[in-house]
Image (cartoon, rainbow, N blue to C red):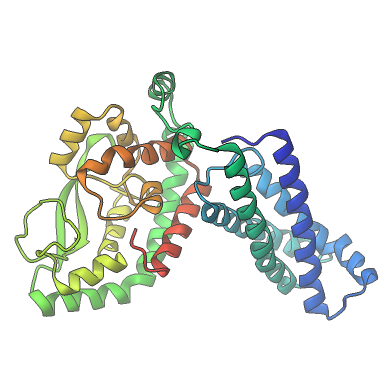
Length: 356
């Protein structure tokens, strides 16, 4: 939903105040000086750069135009990613112009404090705004999800989402390659342990391969750790499924079973973030019975996605109609900023023991 002029003004003033406080507190903690004279001197140098760069970054990322957050936690995640992205140009500026600041510690501490202050303020603001703007309304419809009305469905069907543009395709591919390779290196020890545990409990094969439908309807083989007994079939898994092994239950609960899909990402068959790929048989049924379902095929399927971080896992086929609006919303509003936010939220949900 787009912000009104009054709300934009409140956000700008609030962020400006929080950034200034964060810079002042960080400088005071590092320099051990709290008088206003030294505070003004700091502000005219590095602190002014902190505030200016972060405000510009928030503007570039669209945080003063609209909110894509569905909850106050989402607002916090978007704020965290925006602040982290704002640190990068500041490090470059301070390296090129060392007279502005000689302390990287002040910058990093200011960023940490700003995460707490700005993230909390925006989360509280989201609750207030949501209460005032969506009173008695369906949050999905209020956010103009695709096909909530016939006119919007027609508009969405005839439009070309930004995720399909050549520059977006290249940037998303580079993003996937870099982060998938790093994630594979970090997760390799965990994956090796998972291989050993699976083999010890139920023998081989360790990996599970299954045909899924990818971008533009292309069929590929997805890689996962095997979590069921051998020859368990392709019936949709349900909570408490007796085909799931003890190690498999643990792998599913922690989403470790999804890690081999990093290989699919490196191969260009999947993305880190996107709609989840479905089995061929289910895909045919969904495409034939649900309007606009085929539109989700214009994006590479993902290991995680906007629907996965906003809905519970272990959904049934009957829930696809509820999942689809999230997938199409992601496609319509895609950006690398949104991808980073989904990855951060995925990591946070996993840490708090909620599978995604």
